[in-house]
Image (cartoon, rainbow, N blue to C red; front, side, top):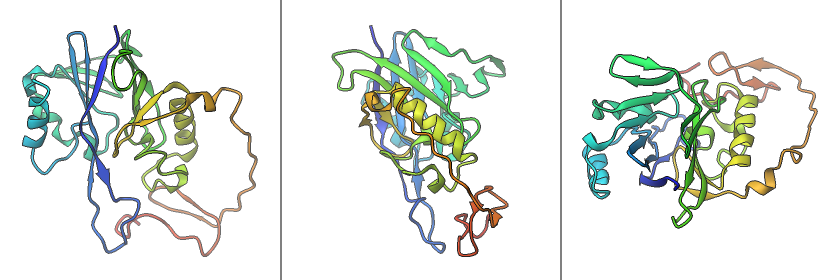
Length: 239
């Protein structure tokens, strides 16, 4: 028997398109995993009201107290601010599984249907849940709930266009792993989408050698700037 996955609340973000004078609006995609006795909420994030999440759970005949694990894909507040709603649940994150004030090491296999792997790049603490679903569900196969490894479907297309990424090459590697393993992807700020993992076989990754001339490096996010006309993509208040 496989697990069942459902998006409780579809996320959004304008972080990749706002002007320097504009304000950022963002909300993480909040997912629900049910596997046997486990009821897992992934990335409870930020909401205008916690009642929105309470109502979404109610539609699944669940209450906050029915959730026994809350998972955080990475340590950016737009993905974890509402974790306190689930005071009785265990917390699953990069450093382990927390039960009140005790913690145990994170096992790669939470259940036979749920695997957790480190997928750094956007953030060092990034993890992805690979969930094997039941064949008769809307999304049969393996679903990757990957936080901001991808914000939305194949976006940002180039890891270097992620202004929050800490390590572009690690993010690129993490994306390749997700694309090779998943039939479906739930990104950090969008709806689920289909992935053809056959296109990303082990032997299909091109090897590209590029000579980079460095003019400067952003002091906050360490982005390489290659000429005098290249601008830092951080918000002005970061740098």
